[in-house]
Length: 144
Image (cartoon, rainbow, N blue to C red; front, top):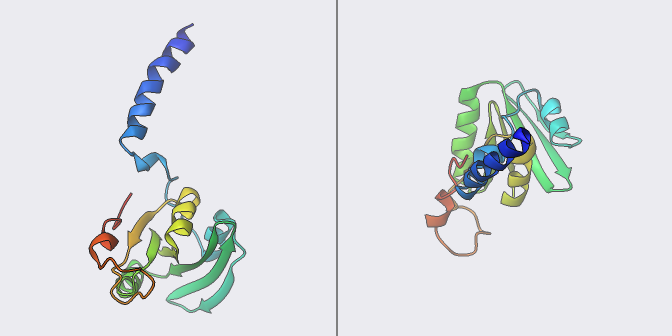
């Protein structure tokens, strides 16, 4: 009886969190690790395309779609890469020393496995945005 009472009290609280759009519960803690470890968490067989001291990059394809996973040797290197990439638009899932770049649908799905923050770059160089200017492209910046 007491357990049933606790559950019935907890349900409205949980529903209230969901009604607020509490995305903190939508993603696990942000993953860490090597490119291979992150790829395994994302259920991907990485196809390494860049293996340099400052960054490693791999193409991945899962049931969610294709994307690029990049890991960085330093936080500064990661931020510089993101700043440059943002000029070209796109959607990025950002963790500590790693970035996933791909379609918004893919990035959102991967957030459920890897955690992280979704960032949306400005689209002034992107030719596939379909006409709305920059206004909408910044609305998802640092959504968490």
